[in-house]
Image 1 (cartoon, rainbow, N blue to C red):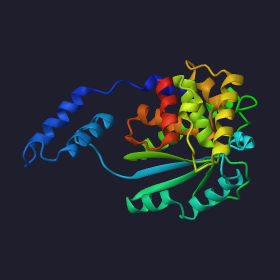
Image 2: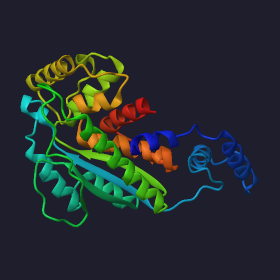
Image 3: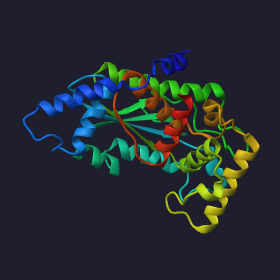
Image 4: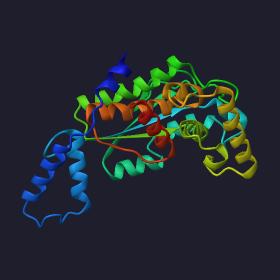
Length: 278
């Protein structure tokens, strides 16, 4: 299977490349170590790319959009319809990430992996919808195991495409009302931390909504009993479609030697899943 083949390609980083990169840095016309953390970053990129000197180039950020059935439990300050509205905003360049990406010369691609809305063909939107939102994980599994695998393999294929196009740097972001509930459930399932110690206020929910969110995540974990040793089981039972795709991009970036920047709670949950996969 494509997922298994990708996991088999992920290898420990070659430290000999780190030494070669440092030797090149020391050969430049500058005092040794004078570039500080930039030198450590240059060495890290060289090791990931397996190339000295490292190659620079195009930077690409995937923003994955999907809906979450757990919003039925009243866990968010906003209704799920905002996912589609914010997807339009991303496509129109009006979101904060659009501004940051433009400022730093990063291309963005919005990927509909599971928004509960029928978009017309739109420039800049990749239609990769696996299903129209997850089911409510507080009442049962969020998705099937096959759907979870398809999410991860979608992300892997996108990373593979980027590697084939010699993209220098990848990023992965998310849009999905209710996805901090899925991200927290994943964190709890993989680490054993209690929901009451892990749940945050997301987009600024009040105390009553916070209590519902904690309760919904606890019920979801109790009902579904995700297997911490089986990341695909965790993703299928309490995860999100976009979180699965982000996990796949992380795995693909590791397999195909593309440096990747991760930031934020949802991508942290995806990184935990990726780490459990490999």
